Image (tube, rainbow, N blue to C red; front, side):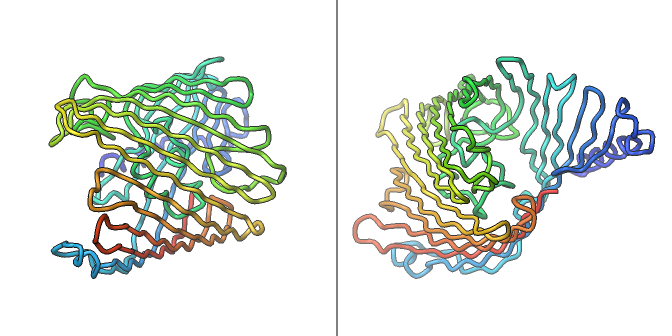
Length: 376
């Protein structure tokens, strides 16, 4: 990753001459700052961003009940400073905005190196857009919202389980009138050894189709919270279906179907939204299907331009966890917005309850997070 960092520095240095007085001529280009450093020329523009999310986390794990349920040991309580994200993002347009691109790397990976997130090029046709590279698949709303625009410090555990994250593939998308959008994508799939930053290991792929709709005045589906100046009632909804086949160590060949639906409303600084997921995995070699479902509902209210509060409930029912009946999550957050989503101080508390199957003991974990989230 030292090489990647060096290339980024060299690339920025090469662009520095663009900021000289000669740039006053619009035909040559100009440098501005708006939600990031922007450099624009006649038929090319690029934006540079840095995302930093330092945080402090305290966890109180239910060690006693885990051991009572038969575990030999359990994670102890922790109090830890951490850098949740440390990302450098380059995005922009070329050839009179006929093409768009994005490159994003996270230097806060657990391995101590870097982790490439996004790397894609998109052709922007008049009726259809075609994207090629590594990107977030069009399945689920919360998973597709940038971590810079989340109202809570983290996505729900339900989204982490069911959401289809970044993968390498190709996508076509377009608009249906002025209020709806459609998406169709195909990626390498989820066989063992595949995934983000990894090439395909077999000829099995995963396909995703999705549709979303928003009434006029809803604003962006790509952020959480009602930050609109006009507080009129507005609503949104979306749905997606994914199907894939693959091979996983210990399971063999399998097929998987995933379903998702989301709804949301905004009015006078209040947003209510939620999602439902269902997944079924069918091993080709026989055996029982593995079914899982989950949902979450969230509410967020911007008290004024500075303060905002939110609460969330989530529930997961997963056959892959035979000792657990359901997992529920209760979360609350209090945000101090210094510059909207671009710079905010967040306090969150989360209780996670694993309800034991049969005569076992329920396990309740607690986490507190203090996070300063910046996107510059």
